[in-house]
Length: 67
Length: 486
Image (cartoon, rainbow over all chains, first blue to last red; front, side, top):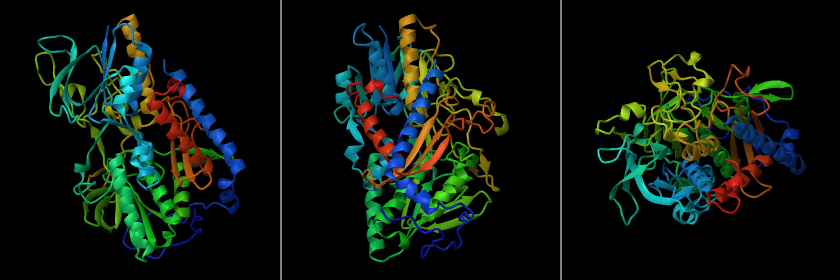
């Protein structure tokens, strides 16, 4: 997979011209550490377990609420 | 002995049918009949991967008939055209009029009698709502596996032009101001961006996200509040960050008026009309209810009593017209039982939502630009299972047995936008929300912050792959399927 586009990269032909494109210039960009963490296998394994635990909690509480 | 008829074999209808048969068993003479115009089941969330060529159609569909034959479920490949909840002059039992769609019986009509009916007919894809929208017009779709296959073919052509040095504009989003399923368009734009990068042509492509959402991250549920490192942040900021990082250009609050060859015309909330030239456009259609007529015993038309004008079936929700600010989580249905008929239910997209979750807006010209509430995926399956429990209780203990409940104002949902293939090369944006319909009387932000999250990373890709295989396994009713939650 290619790396993400650098922070303020504007593609050739990607001018805002006459389209009402929303201004994203104030949106935060990830740090290099965050980008590394998104692909770190150990960290992502922990997130995988956390995400599934959250879904299971929702399923269990949802089923508990259904009566 | 009871006869149960399920209309539709999507996530909610198929789930309801499998659980009904599992609980009723083969003894006792009870029958479960599924009526669906389609011969195949489709795991629709993975159509996104078909739409970028990462999966083939056969990876996301399978024939229903063998599964139903194995489980003892009667399957009619047919479409329902009318419901007769009071029966007819010959029989007071409820009935459904169906017309076969299978090649060997196409056009044959039949009246099926039922003791219990589940309407899970899913969406009607209303491409006609916008002139030129859809595969029959000038844009693409990923709503069906065939649509997605065609989208992948066109995306390949676009990538080839980019490789040849041409600049291309790709538009992904919503084809009408009242569309729902913004999450699917979000997933698709995420995947298209990934494909363009993988092909090494992202720098020559302009990628536009054209949506009816007034704010990024609305997703038709009014957005979400996340808790992150001790602060509350919004799905709007989260999505904006994702789009800025990936160079996706969002156009918000847009109602697509017309799609022409290579050109989309749209109106924005400020009333301005715009034209956007494109080389590739995947625009989702608005959904309507599958058209069903309803008749009383004397053959009088009672369609307006059972269905709202959009064709969705009215259930136990509070449909009183009132301002957006006065709507409450408790207005949402809990049992999906049709008023006046203790043996008729509507689940999944077929039930009429009592109100929009996202704040409805109009442009200064009066054009409605308002995302409709999503009610697909996880909630659909839970609703299907819930009405199956109610029906089984009523068959066993009598019609007075209380209905089970599963309100969207109590249940959660997950949305995972995953791109790429393989365990190490994928990427994903994963969201969970609890509950789907915000409850501001219970939670200050409308939702439980411990169950409402957004994160980016490889793990979401693993989750999506796992869900793909688990839900296909479950839908095929293989050993232990009932232990896989909805």
